[in-house]
Image (cartoon, one colour):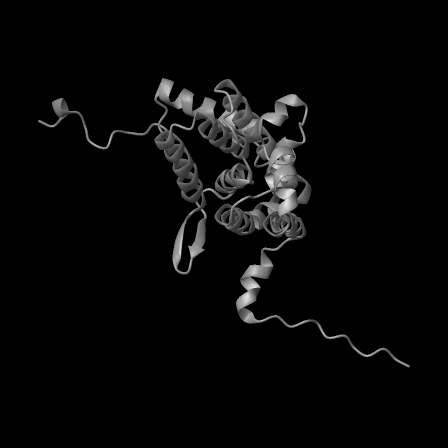
Amino acid sequence: MPDLPRRRPTRPSWSEPISERLTPAIKAFVIADAVLYAFYVFVREVRGPMTAHLALGPGVWRGEIWQLVTSLFVHFDLLGFVFNVIGLWFVGAYIERTQGTRRFVSLFVGAGVLANIALAGVAHLRTYQSGDVFDGCAFAVLALFCAFGRIYGRAATQVFGALTMQARHLAWIFVGWGVVASLFRADWAQLAATLVASAAGYLFAAPGGFREAWGTFRIRRLKRRYRVLDGGAGPPRHPPKKYLN
């Protein structure tokens, strides 16, 4: 008996912009975040162990180094969970499709771990307060936005509806917001993590990123030093005054 033709599942038109950005890696990250957050909300018995051993806290200095990674996937408040997932969904697909899944995952996890090291280091220097733990992937998502701004630069990006802006401007807004918020709260640990995540996202956005950034810096420095004019030297537009008479 011949097999009946299979119909592809139809999706409503409003869901297409959402599903298009749900790449395999982003789906895996979102599912992991959602499952762990659901456990924290609905299973009260696991809240204590998750806070003590999965979030980033003083335990990282007592050998629980896995907190540098596990804290990227645990969330203890709804607002942080929602914003992190939206940010990951919004910008992650662009980077994964241009740089590949392996580099996208490496950037997300690597930048998040580096930011957590800076966060834990500064917090340790000022001595952890009672119950002072850090959760979520906000800094890893910030690194993705910085990578997005560097890769796409001046390209117009649709933010919401008819609102568009350059990719680099969108990245600057998120970095500026993080820096200003940390300064107003005098939270030096958060400030250090923001700067480290931003630098990691910019430098490791693409292969050869550090070399390219260093080359760009040297070129700009030479231009300022020798006053190099774009377009080259040419005849003066107006003759000197002594030849006007």
